[in-house]
Image 1 (tube, rainbow, N blue to C red):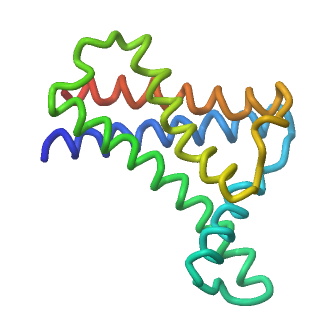
Image 2 (cartoon, rainbow, N blue to C red):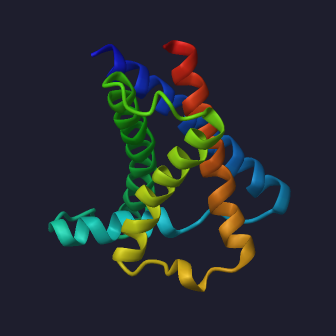
Image 3 (tube, helix red, strand yellow):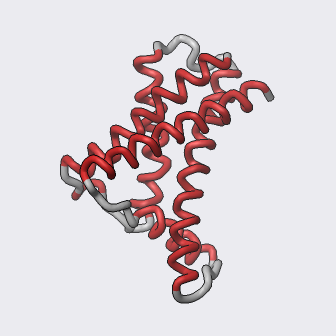
Length: 152
């Protein structure tokens, strides 16, 4: 249970870092928020047969659900990491390798459903889009690993 708790706390710290880097990038480059999380939430709700209301309600709920899915991904990856570490897996990996692997796992946790639902196609992304996705997820991995190790 302790490993799971440490993983959740580390995942929360990593998710905070990801959001800080993302919003910092939006501030520096004056880029708008991505519509992808809301579109993924809408696609998942549609497939599950869950109505999200009508009119402005729908858009607001899609945006909120998209943001919450990001938290679920960050906490879920952190929890899984904690459970694996608690079971003795990954103890031999150096942090410089563990952090980008964890970041890549979190990135896959958001990008695979997006691509699977046809919301986005990473094969068509330009360099700016890849940087906007990779850098925050790398920050997630670095902070999640550091936080877990600090709690361990």
